[in-house]
Figure 1 (cartoon, chains in turn green, yellow):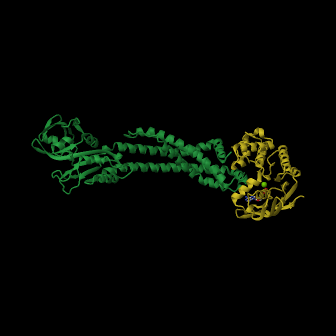
Figure 2 (figure 1 turned 90 degrees about the vertical axis):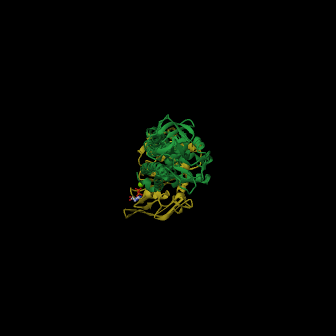
Length: 385
Length: 228
Ligand SMILES: Nc1ncnc2c1ncn2[C@@H]1O[C@H](COP(=O)(O)OP(=O)(O)O)[C@@H](O)[C@H]1O
Ligand SMILES: [Mg+2]
């Protein structure tokens, strides 16, 4: 028999106490695991859906001429051919270190065009990424497919008296109006959106871009980090973060994380308190027993070992069960949470972390009872029957 | 030199600031192989003296030398090692660990040694055979009678063959027949060379001892010197 054998025998034959201790740790760890895995799932979900919120980084050419304003962004070089971005610049964005955090790259070319006698601002876009980026677009008609399909902003359609299915002459070329955007209430309403390559050819600016909108989310690093990585790749461009959109998004996740942390800490503290009081009362009940251990020559450290080994065994069990329970709970809860499409992942690393956490809490709160037990005076302990 | 040399042992307890002299200037010399019966009325200081001799209760003043070791000059942990090596204990009652079987209780002192499980079991079975309980090795304490529990405690006290056995009223909770059995067991252990110090208030036990030490109000009054 080893000291651990004494501990295990005690746990085996005092099942009630063991079940109580395990339960205390189980509830604590299960809550932490549930909170953690749901937060993780929500983070992953947000990252997947981040295009929904629109772009959060805008890349424009470096120039001092303020020539044109697109949204809130000044676009130099629309009227003057100063510096322009190139298609390669858009490709280079996907080579930065944090490229996994780039969800969408939407390059654009802007230019004034003559449309049936009227001056209109024409925007060449990559339709699939543009539509993914502008989730608020509501197209009446169909999505553009061919190179000569265009989308009209609400005001542009009104001004030109066009609706979906009509043909439209821009410059010398004939296009088809695939759809009209419902009123947005911004400058987008007066624009005509065409296929990027076609517009580039039409404006005589093959391979050139006026701006690139990027949608990125980095939950583990600040958006500034991504901005600086892009700046490094594109020294001739001005890369700016649209702070507000990003901050709101990161704040939501951070708040969720903080909430989970607070709940976890409280529940773990309760678990620790349960372990502490149960262990304390167990030590008091075992006063005479500990006196016998000490009388037959067990050192203080031997008594500590017996009690801490019990805590270790119970904590490991509580941690393992807590992990399993927490994962089951979060797989049940996660799909019920609004719009969560990313499932909960069974990560064995989280399991190990859960067990380590349980051991940390369980043994941590058993140290004081163990010290108390080992400091019992054997003569005194044997006197009290 | 005697195996145990106690000189000028005094023990003062403080209960709520009131000092109680449990032992006054007790000196005692015990040779190897003696069987001492420590007798006296309740509250006279017998248990106090035994726990001091048992290296568990530092005296207020005085000295205890066992086998040339000055016991109370050792650190607390070294005194635990000393108890492990030199002493076996038998108490009056409730002395078995309730969740360990008879054989596990018996091998308890071996749990802190490096001996293999097989070796430990063999030694524990040997000790249980000495007390005539090998057939009940697997039982838990509450499945044993009071006398059987006492014998398991004796098996535990002798399992690693210490030179000295200390017993505090070992027959106190037993009926006279089983008490007699325990005393016979002590007698034969003593004949095997074990030095025995036993606290008892039962005069029937006195004849088993080689020497009776009487104690009254913390003072020794009889049988202090060693028998030659
Ligand atoms: N740990 C203690 N604290 C306070 N008083 C004690 C303690 N142990 C013993 N005493 C007192 O010392 C005296 C002797 O006790 P004890 O040695 O137990 O006597 P005996 O075993 O002969 O009955 C008693 O008055 C008892 O109340
Ligand atoms: Mg007593």
